[in-house]
Length: 386
Image 1 (cartoon, rainbow, N blue to C red):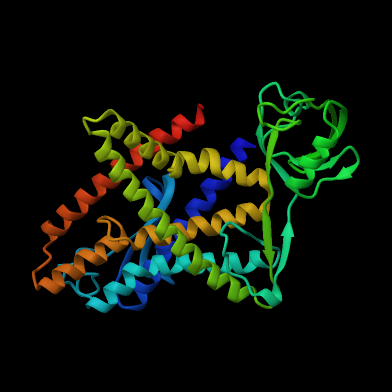
Image 2: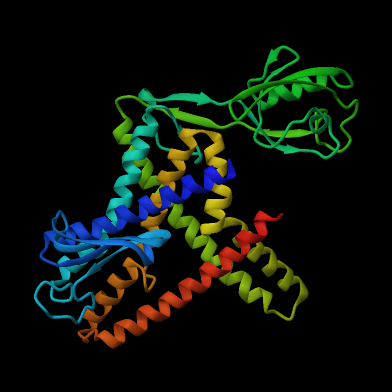
């Protein structure tokens, strides 16, 4: 399941990046900018072929590369100062803007399509005020899912694990956390029968409940969560668009909060005061737990979504596509938003953005970005071995 989850995640991530790059390429082609190469993955090349005529133009080199971490598009004269006919640099400001932001638009569009489709079966409710059309919304409550199993608890002895879904308790249907609490309290100290679902298969087990609850972990020794889904019919397209906008806002707010916590935590960790250093280290730990890089996404998040079912996998794909859009629109050098921001600033200042100057800015941004990726990846590896 782990290997299957990693492969599924890898395919989905590559597809999301490829459609992002395809957006750049198509808009460039439609506005007279020559597309020289369109690659899946990153070099070294595994296969390449120059196609005389395609939707991306004439004599475009299509390549498949050995590093399956996304894709790229190479345009003629990619520097802002290039002035050859058919080059990116020779295009006007509005055309450059469309080319740079086309990938962001495609990722948002993909999120809208996926959330629209998903709303027909039910979008997971993850926000307290998540958008829905009241007259066309059915709230679906999923079975209770095990979120914590106490050590040497009745649940542990019964073989329950994180992610298991409780279906019946001593013949009674388990519908909500309160009901489960009442059932365990009424049967404390007694042997009970549990029926649960694990990865689509039902299991039956027995265990003896605790007679006391002194550690506040319950007579069964577990804690549970209950997820809800919001299902729509005719309003699905509206829900798809509105949910994408709402999740985008939440992602931007979350990104800002993480950035602030990282900065605040770093500053406090350098303090001479021990309490301030401790508070700073806690903030940095919170940041580490809140972010995930390629290792965390492929090694943890996608395998969990894969085991949870196709709906969770589609929802995760939509959220990652939306996140790619958000990250690429931020004014970070080396990303689309950073390139647009740099170009716009120099235009407003009426200063030439020379090739050397642009390369220096983008290189610095790229090195900082890679440094962050290394730090996040290191944290991800630590999570895998906890």
